[in-house]
Image 1 (cartoon, rainbow, N blue to C red):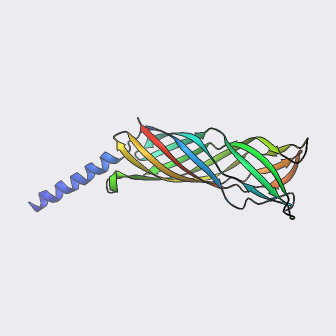
Image 2 (tube, rainbow, N blue to C red):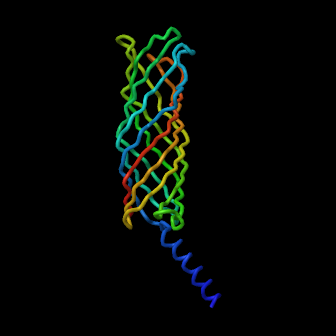
Length: 210
């Protein structure tokens, strides 16, 4: 009788694990909003003449993920352009304002943990990948005729989050990403250094699996 109970318990555990695994071939789409929160010290430009501060921004985002194996997915994150105000401050405290827009598509390989032993069947996940950030519509308010150019950046990206299911194929997601963003900057065609915008990106989303 004890042996039968052990076999039944083991079978039940295996069934639970399989039931909560995301099977290979599954697609998911997540739609929500994320805040790009650059690090507080963004470096200096023009041989240290100006310290740089880049503000944060929130925009709608969408991602798609395809599971190449059970619980292992490849995800692509996209968004509408983020807008950032930039403040350059010299040694005297005088400020020069600038601004830019950017798109940060990010490709990640992710692992989703089985949630059978978590409260509410919450499924945590982690991921690592590459971020490509392209900047455009840069502007600097020095005087007429100055051309600011922030070059595109490529860097590593990390991802961690929780999916909280409320239906068999639907969930609420809370996540955070780290993006290594360190673009070179040009003014009127000349190199004036690079800035470290490396950001934490915090978000929420509705997730649908197919």
